Amino acid sequence: MTTRNTATGDVDPTVRAELDRLRDSIDNIDAAVVHMLAERFKCTQQVGHLKAAHHLPPADPAREAAQIDRLRRLAESAKLDPAFAEKLLNFIIAEVIRHHERIADDATSTGDTPGK
Image (cartoon, rainbow, N blue to C red):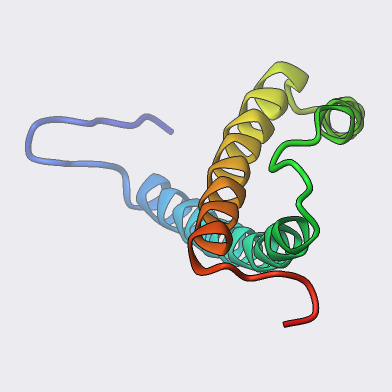
């Protein structure tokens, strides 16, 4: 079976069907990733409020390092490039810290304290 991909988009129908099937799977996985990230950020927002209420720093370098090590091991066992997994987690961690800093700033400006 040969494929042909010209400017007009002529592709063997069997190949097109397989591409469509795989792309549908990719679209479903992407949706699941977005929903999982949304759930993760709901949890980290709660962590941010707890930290702010108890005047804890937004970042926790020891926890972050442990999570990176853990994710690298998971990536290796899943046959995913550990460096890619680390970059992804670092990006997520940076966003979480940014949220925690904003929550802490908001708590400071409104005078929120534990027990209020």
